[in-house]
Image (cartoon, rainbow, N blue to C red; front, side):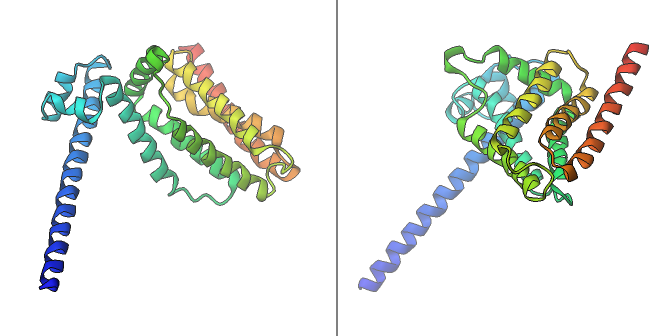
Length: 245
């Protein structure tokens, strides 16, 4: 009798877990559809000022669903960024360059690649986020995400130090923050049209190269200088084209 009760309890517990799992799966699927719908609408309209009704219709869900799953239109837009961040982490894990210097520049190329592959979409997205930054405590970067990004890039710099390309006596934390400031400066210049999309990677790469050369060892300086020179050449070539046009 007790065994029968025990089996019945286990069976009921399993049924509840399965039911909850299916419910979470369905919720995750609706989230994906809403994010995909918002992406498509931003691409089509060149605007992030979308109504929740329009997003819900495009995603084929009820009007209440985006509010229930995200809370606000801005949170839907932020969810697009968070999805890209997860995608970056997955692609970053597949990078296996032979040395730490190449790893840093491969990661930079991967990051910039999102913007150069779909410039209209990302420029629209970032302009909208910057327009609302600070209003009502709004931010476009979660503290845990900033910490994750900082740790990821710091590990790359520490690897370069271990491999003898960068000076171990210099702070990996400070180097990472300097590189982040460089990247953010290039991003803002691009968002507001000060540099063309095709100049993003050369501009960021050149800035990274100059900063890393300042922290390089004798053996690392030559390798980093070659990278820097290639980005400088690309910047100069594009600038000449722009002047000629």
